[in-house]
Image 1 (cartoon, rainbow, N blue to C red):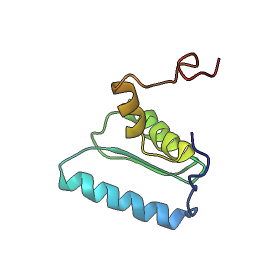
Image 2 (cartoon, helix red, strand yellow):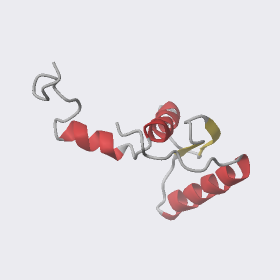
Image 3 (tube, rainbow, N blue to C red):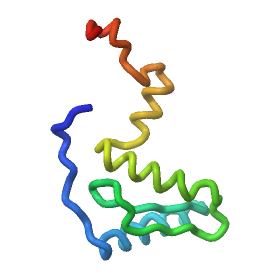
Length: 98
């Protein structure tokens, strides 16, 4: 993982609440029912909302996904794409690191 990707500017509770409201409005626009987690730059939960009808199982998923994105400083889609392409890890023998 490159360590030179900046964490970004930390946000406070007021900003987190505004981001949550934006995400909720977007979900409603698409008739979605979501669990929305907003974390700080270190991946610690700032605010969370479970919309009516959202899956209970997705509570932990949304929080862990937000935490992972913040701590690894990239969208979680990057990990999905790596798994999908079979590049979830680097083989140390192939990389000449063994």
